[in-house]
Length: 242
Image (cartoon, rainbow, N blue to C red; front, top):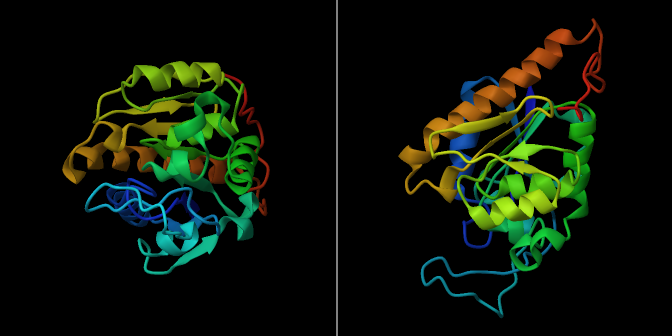
């Protein structure tokens, strides 16, 4: 059975993961027969936002792993405990937490710093030729981790983000809410999700399509492995070449 990591950044779109995106992704993965491994860094969030008022709570401190655990009923581990060799694929959930907590893009733009464990997992999975899915703001994190690797992603139709992605050596592909973008050479699948969607019903078709393509890539890799293979190397795959 495939094991797919789901990278979270808190609970709630203003300061963590977009909950609808997380739930729709996990549902699609389980329907596809994959085992889900939820994960988040065990560190403090960069900010805490009151999701009722929309105001930042400057005196409050929350832990990213603890908050992310709310989404998955406590079934989660720290990114520090996760080896890229133990995963067949990774999906990065969006929400502002992906660009506030997992990296500093919200403040620093193309000069952003990235969480070391998030960077490690993304770069190692890419080097192993394993598929990565990313939605909403998640593709920005992937582009930061894979600077100058000639990847292509989508965040929908945001012009400013497109320019920043170009500064990172990535290509942005404009898409609509019901579309996904597939970078076949790098096995990266992305979709705008709630960068364009207003409801779960609007976001679901593309999220489900993203999951289907990521799982498809992972199954193709498994099928290509020689008998007794570990899944840690992929014969015939050159993941950095478009």
